[in-house]
Image 1: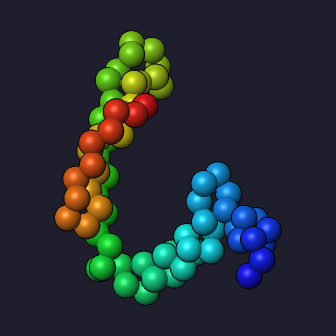
Image 2: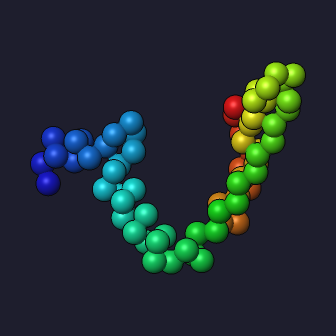
Length: 69
C-alpha cells in the first residue's frame, strides 16, 4: 500500500481500518473485551443542568481514571 493511501486511513489520529477491524472482532466476541463505564453528576441548581463527569472505567483487567466533563 502506498504511503498516501495509508495516511488517508488515519483520521484524528485513529487508524480507521484497524478501528473497524476491532469493532468487527468485538461484535463477534463481546466477552473478550469487557468494558465498564462509571458516571457522576452534581446538581448545579438550575433545571436540566448538572456537572456531569465520566468516572473511572474498566477495559479488560485495567481500571482507568481520568478527569473529564
